[in-house]
Length: 173
Image: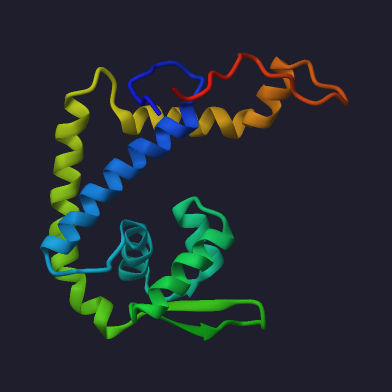
């Protein structure tokens, strides 16, 4: 795949590639710090729990902007790694997530890394013609106002018919 191609046609693929590059860089720093296995996706959960204390998975999902399922999967991975523990909540469906002493012992190193990552992100955005964080916020707002499914349906004039290919897909060389 040629990721140098610009335009909206492969936007999702190119955004995943960008996210993979960003996450790989952060994950490499975690390894450099001796935090093997610590994943960038753990950071929002650790930060929320460190700041607010124990909370339900549903609150973590809401605070991080992911689905309950995604938050639950992340928490399960963190529990396997000994970073969080789960306890029953007020009803049978609710599970409360808390940091373990292991996770708390990592906080000084993580906070240093988080500050460095924030500074690196500011430097990265300074190289761009428009701040990526602001563009992402605008994109999320636009999709909350009108989801991509609605946009595609309108562009294809969908009623009960399947989507027709907008462009011919070229085979690999």
